[in-house]
Image (cartoon, rainbow, N blue to C red; front, side, top):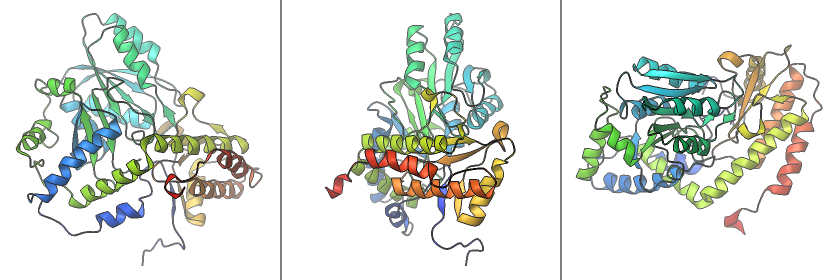
Length: 401
């Protein structure tokens, strides 16, 4: 028996990894197969076409890489850039910080635009840098769409407009790890050159698959990029795509079947409905936080995330104690505050295969924890606020009408 056993189900409300639906678990519960047999390439071919739909691209080429989001970052950078290339990258939280660190360690010349944690990317500074860069020394703009450390979502359409206004040819590279399949994401319409996500976030799969999608412009850039890459080299993938066998090395058969089931669930619900559901859950969570008398780490409504809410606690409370108490007493997993906001915020993840009643269970648990740690909360206040909103906005389940 697991030494951390608790009765019932663990209520997993970190912003990734997320709950895995039973259909995905069952699909992965199978033996290994010969990936060189006709069956696996045939499935891979359909997966690659369907993955393009979650990026909303018809021209992009996807790569299913056995890695995490960190590996997907490296794939995006090393396939399109050369050492010494100038990038502009936004520091707005822990994960954008880590991507900047990776860029620096890969020997790119990183021009960092830093904002206070809880704010979005400063696009006015981006505009001034692009206006001044008449020699086009900036080779790429790197931005995290949804910063999970602070619950901040950036406006990608505005980034594209700024690039277009200055007719700047820089590549547009986007971390969509905690946004794709949950927030509105339009690769082609917004002129994104490389977009990436991870299987353990809104796709609701186990960790282990990094999904990268490259535009024709990015693929062209990869032909002259001089960064060293081996495992992440798109050229190797493209060679096997052309052969019709698809895999330059052994894929995870189980994750491929899991991806098939995960995509089927998303398409059955409808991507627009999935995005609307995340919008409802995000709004309900923020209403609960407001009813508790607490503040959102995100400073403006335009930056609110519909996949994670970072909740600021009073100075006399250590937010790590909230997370610890939730796991030890209520079998509830919440996200810790990271780096600059460690001890100051706890995070509620509300992304992936998740419904309204699951969220309400989480909010009820948070209320009990807040009372445990000495915060003067009226039990039921946040749950009531979320209930009132969800009761008025939750649609009938389409397949059951």
